[in-house]
Image 1 (cartoon, rainbow, N blue to C red):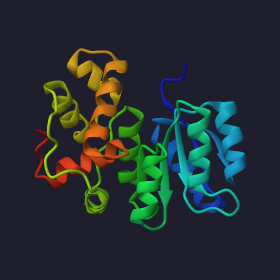
Image 2 (cartoon, rainbow, N blue to C red; image 1 turned 180 degrees about the vertical axis):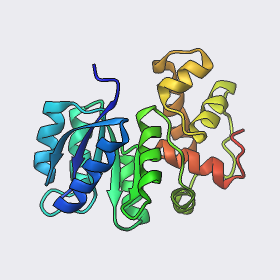
Image 3 (tube, one colour; image 1 turned 90 degrees about the vertical axis):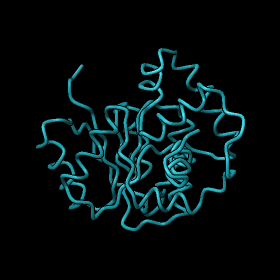
Length: 211
């Protein structure tokens, strides 16, 4: 197994896609295992190559990014999907997160910042972008107080807000991945939310308190 994270690029702009491939390959931390110019080709390559990470353009002719994301979720691939988009739209952001995206990045992000963001994702953590959190916080309609959280649920919520994945939360709390998934599901139900990042946005909106 290659020590560096494997990466699939799905974007319909050849010049931009080539630039991304060079950026990630030259970083020494990633191996670009495939490039697709459209959604259908991207899904096929994802199934064949099983990359650890997928950078997915949101707006493509034919099969758009949200449709690709939905199909990838139904296929239950283990790949982490990061959305790339030219503009930050709240409705698209929320839709992408609810379909399982683990990151959302603007195309005009500085190259070093993009590399750092994807590095975090590859290690199971995500550094939450302030603009993204602010946009999510406007959308979040969770309760003013979370109510009857157990101690473990409160701990899990705080670690989600810190950007940790289920695997890292499990390690931190000394419990199984499956138990963490149950806590996350309970939190989403209690807060009436649909994604981990919405939970994180709720914590940030309420001044950093997860209890």
